[in-house]
Image 1 (cartoon, rainbow, N blue to C red):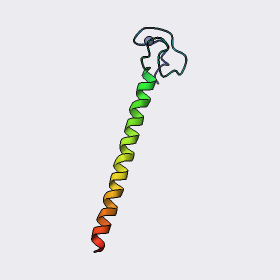
Image 2 (cartoon, rainbow, N blue to C red):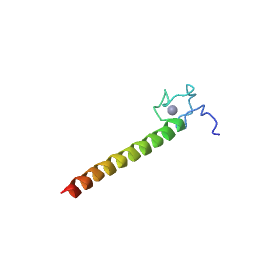
Image 3 (spheres, rainbow, N blue to C red):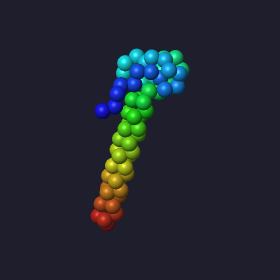
Image 4 (spheres, rainbow, N blue to C red):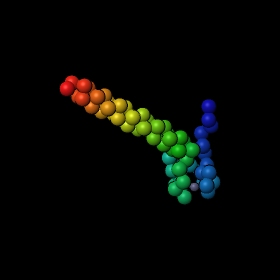
Length: 65
Ligand SMILES: [Zn+2]
């Protein structure tokens, strides 16, 4: 389990608990960066799912004729 980040990696200022950004310099916290990566991955999976669905519909459409 990762310890809660208490100070900014960039400027060293104390962070508000659970903050996504440093109040002083605006740098993202480690927690925010990790959540950001997860969000990107989720969108990618969703996008691939939509593509697969469109492909399946096109395939079914062309095989009806
Ligand atoms: Zn900072």
